[in-house]
Amino acid sequence: MEIKTIVGLEIHVQLKTKTKMFCSCEASYFEDKANTHVCPVCLGLPGALPVLNKEALIKAIRVGKVLNFTINNRSRFDRKNYMYPDLFKGYQITQFEFPIDTDGFIDLDNNKRINIFRAHLEEDTAKSLHHEGYTLLDGNKAGIPLLEIVSAPEMYSSKEAKEYAKKVYNLVRFVGASDCDMEKGQMRFDVNVNLEIHKEGKIFKTPIVEIKNLNSFRSLERSIEYEEKRQLEEFEKTGKVLDRGNKSTRGWNDNLSKTYFQREKEESDDYRYFPEPDIPPLNLSDGFISKAIESIDVLPQVAQKKLEEEYLLPHSIVILIMEERKYYDFFQRITTLYKNYINLANWFSTDILSLVNQYNINLSDISTDEIVKILTAVDKKEITVSTGKQILKSVLIDKDDIDILLEKNSLISDQGKLDETVKEVLDKNPDIIEKYLSGKESILSFLIGEVMKILKGRANPLEVKNKILDGISKIKSN
Image (tube, rainbow, N blue to C red; front, side, top):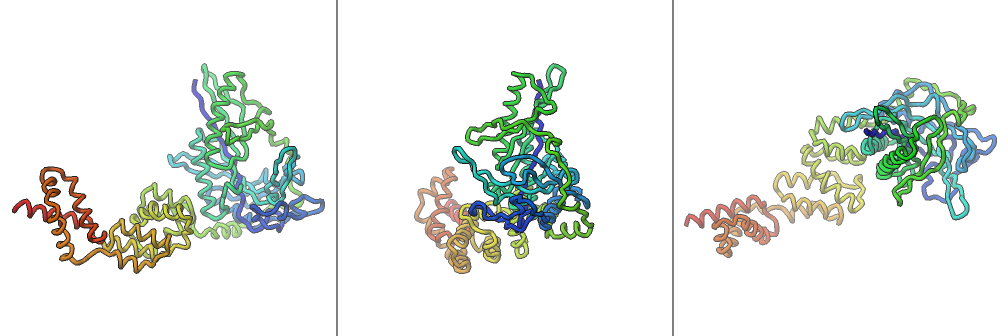
C-alpha cells in the first residue's frame, strides 16, 4: 500500500494599513479595550456604505509581485453569505470570481514549484470571546483588511507545507505588506489535507479535511502529521472516500496535539456569492499597478541575488539574512563602509544576532561606525577575535565607549616586551618544556596561556605560539 499526503494552504494575512478595509476606523487594535475601534460600517448597521481602502489595494499588489502573480487590472468584490456570530452583517465582503491576484507560484529550496491559485482581498470578522456558558463579541477586528492566499494542493508532506508557508511569511514581511505577527493574529493558516491511497491496483482518496485558524508553523506541521495518521485509521476502519458534500472542518488542540471535528464543510455555492452592490468593480490602470510595485524599495528576489552573486555569501547565511527585512537593511548599512562581506556575514549570523536576540536590541539602534571599527581592528590584527567579541558585547549591552575599549585592548606592538614575557614564562617552567619535548605537545597551550595572562590578553596567540616554539627550539639546541 502506497500513501500520498496532499496538502493545500489558505494563508490569511492582515494587511498593514492605518485604517480598516471599508471604513476609517483605526486598524491598530491589538490589546485595546473591546469595541473601541468600531463604526456603523464595520458593525454592519443598516444604511452604512463601505469605501475601499486604497492602501490595502497597494499592499495586495506588492504581495502579488513578490509571489509571481498576474496582477489583474479588473477585479471585483462579492458578498459571501453565511450566518455566524462573529459576522455582524451576515455576509463577508470578499473577492470570488475576479480576485486581484491570480496564477502565482513559489519555488521551494529543492526547486519544486508550488503554484498559487489566487490572492484575494476581503475583510476580517469580529473576535469571539468564549466564557463558561456564554460568548462575547469584540468588533475591533471586524473589517481589518485581509489578503487570502490560496495555494494549489501540491504539497505532499508537512515539511513542504511548512517551507512554503515560511517563504510566504518572509516575502510578505520583506515588502512591508504585513508584520505577520501570529501571536496577534496577523497571519493564520487554514490547511486542506487528505490522503491518496494506492491499494490493490486501485486509488482511493480520503475526504478532504480543512484545519482552521492555525497560528504557528509548529501547529501547521503537527496538525498535518496528526491528520495523516487519523485519516489512514479512519479509511482502514470505514473505507470512506472523497465525495461531494463530505468535506469537514476541524479545529486544532495544541495542548492535546490533535484535531477535533467542528462541522461539515460548505461548498462554494452554499455561500450564495453575488457581486457586492455597494462597491463598483475595480478597473486599475497599468500606471497604478506599476506605481504600487515601484513603492517596493527593493524586491526580495533582487536582494537575495545581490547577497549571493555580488557578496558571494554562503546559502545558509543568505537564507538567514532574508528571513527578516531588518536583517537585510542592517547588513546593507554596514556594507556601505565595510567590504569584507563574508567576514561581516559570519559576525552578523553568530555574534551580533546572538546579542540582539538575547538582549532584545533594536538593530536600527546599533551604530554602523562602531561595528565597522571592531571588524576593522580585528582585520588589522590590532585586537584578537575574542577581544573583538568582548568589545562588541560591551558596546551593545553596556554602551561603553568604543574608542576607549579599542585603545585599552589593543595588541602589544612592542616586540621587546613580548620576547621578554615569553622568556620569563619559559624560564619559570622547565618541567613543562621537558614534557613538551618528550612528546606531550598539547601542553604547549599552558605556556601560551601563561604569556597571555601576563599580557592581559593583549597579544596575538599565534604570534605567542611561534615565539614559544622558537624559544623551546633554542633551549633544545643548547
